[in-house]
Image (cartoon, helix red, strand yellow):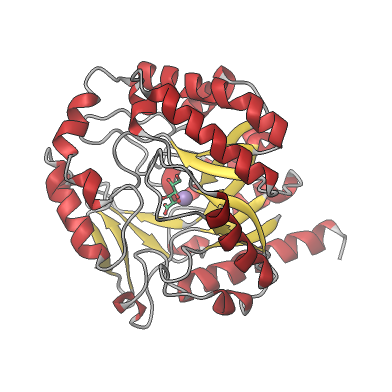
Length: 358
Ligand code: CS2
Ligand code: MN
């Protein structure tokens, strides 16, 4: 397992690479060109600049999260080929520079969805929160909340210029049901697989968050059966998973350790975070400690460890602690994620020792 940390880049993150160097065990930085909208060309100089900076601080830059997929590809419009060509160009450039894994998602319109970015927890910290009943029929209301909560930072998937055209975007998804979305994903992957093979770059799809359809839009990576269908339809080792426990976790029927045991050889990137699911279906993000929520983080790590997982892992969202929400990106503060790293390394190291017979 290789521990990594998601960093949004200079001027775009309250945390610096020098902070991250002081967290034990972090080997790699998960990065992206966050100024790019889906479908835009990634220039070589821009890529080099970020990768060089990351490497100059002693980290690897093996994982990119994300290269976002243009809506026309998800909808299956005739213009999709043009955007797939641009995607291929980006894979080539990243592969040539040693990038090993590209994390992406195939969620229509939105990336992750929450109703409150700073919901107070009983201990006085706060975190991202999802109120089931607040997801009514108007996505504009949700978008307004997210944009307001994000403050000076733009949120991937919630870029103001996209949100301004939300109604139009929704209309263009009419007729795209689960089967159609699966079909469009297959088309996309089949076109890019040869380049991934040639460049030795693994595509790792991120599950849908939350793991159920919202606003009538289909969501197809949200359970064991959906994952199986996804892996079977393009049965190529270059197409695999970013297994995110925080995304699958809010559906308590998802047995995450068993999903990891079943599909471990196609998991290239592990996102670990814990969620506490309330009786009415609402959920909060909580600390990484298993006991604090519904994700048994020990069993998750054990499932990876038992299978000799050598891929990348990162703490996903954390709570905002000690007042840091005044400046940090929602879900991406320093303290709770650093605590998460230490908790996970603690579990991992003891699993290592036990295996070694100590
Ligand atoms: C991330 C996702 O913050 C998060 O929850 O795990 O936003 C992830 O980066 C994207 O879905 C990947 O495309
Ligand atoms: Mn995730």
